[in-house]
Image (cartoon, rainbow, N blue to C red; front, side, top):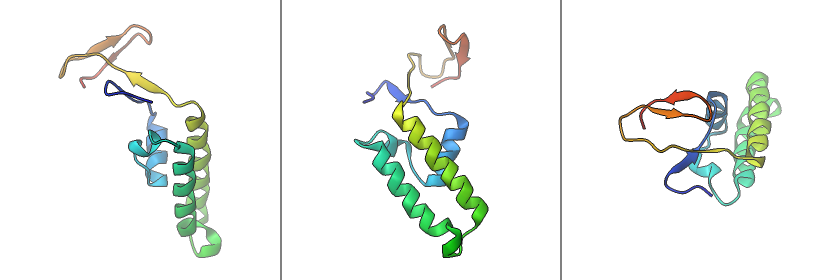
Length: 101
């Protein structure tokens, strides 16, 4: 589990999946993220399922978000950044500069 200096590493796509599933980052750091993802999916499926009067396209996107977040939850990634507040930092492992914290 992450500590104070560690945070979730999510791509922009995964962040959009969180919005689709109406989840927060804190839900992914909970004791059982699979359960949180499943329950969020079931809640949203009741709204978007075509048989319940929802939109078929949105339901397909919801299914994709559910599957991708379950895959992410199998091997969650965290990032540990050590930098000064308000300063850019260089990560030698990725050869990239990171914006200020």
